[in-house]
Length: 278
Image (cartoon, rainbow, N blue to C red; front, side):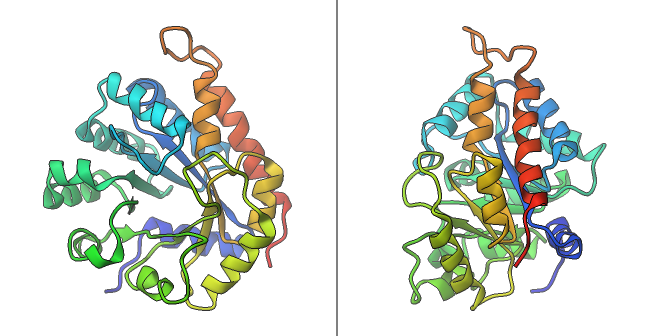
């Protein structure tokens, strides 16, 4: 099954530029739809190469406290799957190049309806999906239909993904592989760069798909180190936390909230640009 998305084009461009990319994660609708969309629109200019847009869910079991709270804030503010698609449509009015990946759990997709979800996602301008709780054994459920709709299905690998498991993980993965650099939930530990480098090298011995590394990426130094062994660094919890730190007592964004996140993104992007690719 052969098709190209904005994700493929972006990694081709990054390769030509000789640098690793920055993948940024935010939760759709956090802390409210307007602030979330304004931040999303500003991310590319700040240095984001790919945007992962989290689909809020009541039970984000693989996520740490920062993203769990972001989901709660978004749902409290009225975020729905339909409003998430509306965000993507609004973003695409001004930006037809930055790849967008919807990331989350299968339950909201299933409740919305798989066929309807894939149709709406493609029409809105989504390029790929990360559904963290759908294993390769369930590829017929959503992965294969997503690829048939022209959407990349991005799989996660972890430090516990052994040689026997890796081929199954890679089999229908496209766009990029998301390597989870630490065991546990998001945003709670810092990655060990030496171990990450060894893991990425092992993965790349089996595939030509770009490898993005995430979980615990918070500083320009960490981003730079990851960019020297992988094709992209992913940051999410740090951005969510930067926003959360600048909410008032009622949970509303203060005047400097968006800029605080963008400042962090600029720093991460600068770290990646300063690094050397292998």
